[in-house]
Image (cartoon, rainbow over all chains, first blue to last red; front, side, top):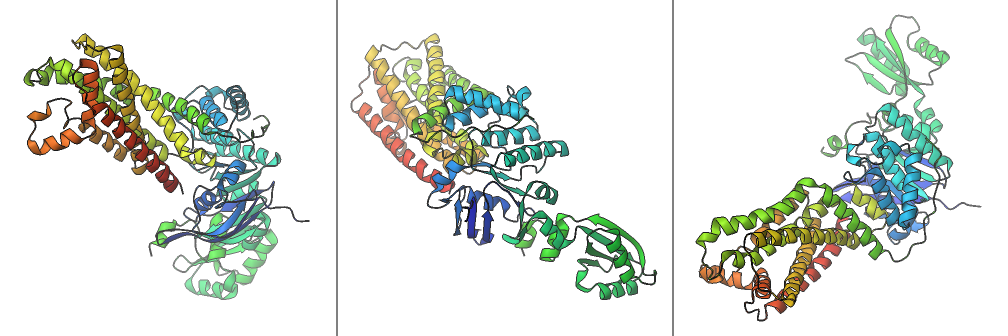
Amino acid sequence: MTIPLAISATSLTKSYREHQVVRGIDLRVTPGSVFALLGPNGAGKTTTVRILATLTRPTSGTALVAGHDIVDDPRGVRRSISVTGQYAALDDLQTGAENLRMIGRLAGLTAEQARQRAAELLTQFDLTEAAKRRVGTWSGGMRRRLDIAASLVVEPLIVFLDEPTTGLDPRSRLALWNVIAQLASAGITIFLTTQYLEEADRLAARVALIDGGRIVAEGTPAELKRRVGNSRLDLDLVSDDAFMSAIDRLGARATRTDRAALSISVPTDGSAAQVRALLDEIDPGNRLLSQFTVHTATLDDVFLSLTGRVGGQPEMERSNV
Amino acid sequence: MSEIVMTAAPPSRVTLPRDALVMSARCLRLSARTIDALLTALLLPVILMLLFVYLFGGAIQTGTEYVTYVVPGVLLLCAGFGAATTAVSVSNDMTSGIIDRFRAMDISGTALLAGHVAASLVRNAISTTLVLGVAFLIGFRPSASLAGWLLAIGILLLFVLAMSWLSAAIGLLSGSPEAANGFTFLVMFLPYPSSAFVPIETMPSWLQGFARHQPVTPMIETIRGALLGTPIGNNAWLSVAWCAAIIAVSVVIAAVVFQRRTA
């Protein structure tokens, strides 16, 4: 038996004049799961979310969201989803309670139901203290929570969260992760975008890596990390000869080399046994290495190994070439 | 944080009137809280009237008390300016994140704009009352019957409605609130080359043609006639026709532009 997918996209593209932002994206998201689209700034994450949420029409390609075609039946899609963008979509001049009541009324609740629902959500999201203050005076983390609360005034089948924690301090980020984990346990399908490997790792059952408008890898967080190694071993060599000899021995395993700085990076699982074996292999005589450090794999490492270059570079620098 | 409880969505039905009502309440609340814009909308008309009556009034010969001659024009000038600020508030919405939430909730552009237009009508009703009150204080003595008052108020409301819809369309077309703000100045200057402040006969002949046939003139003549008993002729019908045409064109443009800007 096949379960109908919450989201299925085929060959989505989006161009603005000559600039192609999304270059053929395929996605499959199972209902009730958390799916993360992970990538650097300018990779096409927001555009992909906007296409799926019917806020932007794709240049080509098709997608079904909650069983509705995004181009032929946008209203069907909109009835099934909620979207929380990168910028809080609320009125600064209204209080938290007023914003939520307004959204409730627009969603079809009566005035009394909307008032009750607003009060419930403010309690559930720990915002009662600020409920009577205008949103313009709130902190970034509070606004983000209210924004998500506004997305839950009536129950959506699918929640889109575009970079829900970008720009938040660690404590607010943690609070939001709790919110998202709770939504997931309530059985809602969540499609989130993020720049943080840790966030995808922590929240998502499946992660798609997006770069330059394309999906470059997809899998569970564990699968993806296995592809880059959980950790990265950075080596400092004593001389240029030592550097060349290490390069020879490592071959394609070296993901980053810098001859001027005499440094080489190699993916590893971080275990003492593997690190020791690598060091012995590169430097059997204990003379070539001056230093080594082990780092936890980062988004940069994932991108480096999959695309051959550093991931965090702004899209603009590349597209201007 | 306590546990998040879900509420199922109510079944969908015809939502335009309800959405427009909710949007009107929202826009009124936002208007009331945008203090600087609110003060401008309420005080500028009064200041302009005092300026005309006391500063220019002595130098302008219209055959009647100048305050009596100029009040209909000032009312229209203020209504036009007040309505034109709709462009700024619409543009503010279009350039902020909230438009995405409304669209993802399937709120129609018409409902959103109707809310802005309704708030504009209320704002202008208040500022017009204020201007009329001050006009009475400084010697405006119309000889209007109840029917005359109703006609004058009706034409003013229709003008505000037309200018508000036009402004809403302009607000959608302009790329930023600053650009939209430029439109309010354009609208403010429209009543000058008309019979609002000086008789058209006193203008250079090349301007007279424009002044006679631009939409503001029949409206001013209608309001003046209704309040002061000067002949109205076909000016009332001309005013209604102008307003109806502006509303029809603006609503269509707004719907098309909203679709396009949000596609």
